[in-house]
Length: 152
Length: 152
Image (cartoon, each protein chain N blue to C red):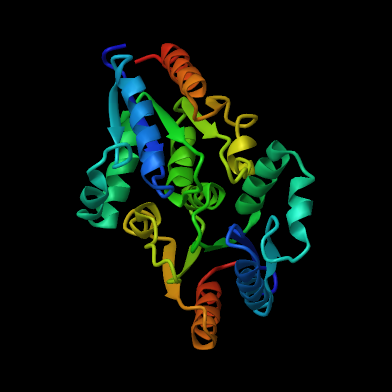
């Protein structure tokens, strides 16, 4: 497990609360002994860092990171062009992908393009969680279970 | 040109104003003699229709439509998992893709995963427009120019 590389994708458009959640999920991945490859989500100081790089650099680096990773974990509660693009890239490479979706206040449902993908892409798993203490604990167990099934 | 099939992708999360814009863009595509394949954007009565189908049906149908289409046109002003997923699918199939991005009130910039993609995927074009009369006219010219370059 110590060699496992995990690409983490998420949108922080929802603001600091989402950032804090992503931080917790990233810490849960690291707690499994995995290395996390991720652009800029989950780190309090990174909005600026991401924007210091030209978009083609970010695009090519992130696609390379996904190719290099053993699997990907995506937080898909917020809509995001980049996260959807990255999930499709990971699936076409045959990578195991875990999508974590939280039912939140505004109550929108998960995009059919993600919710409907596991039937075609068998390496995709979707886990619905809630953002309370019990729900976060379950999400962390889902991450642990998912990583146990991934071969480094 | 009359045989051209165009996949149209867009998010209507922004509400009726976005829907009206997508309608105009779809009409501009049809005005070029092309057939538009699209899930549910741009039609006033379709929020319900889309949701009548199970997500795996929608997912598989939309990927098939993209494969069948000669090219894709995506309205990328709003973040959307599905639209990002579909754009990546179209690019991996080598399809010409036109992304239309409007600078709007809240002023967010286009995702780096889309803005940075043309360097790797040469079939992708990005056109920035505004949603006033002059801007919409330019967007329609961009659609016409793009379709002229697509072979049916």
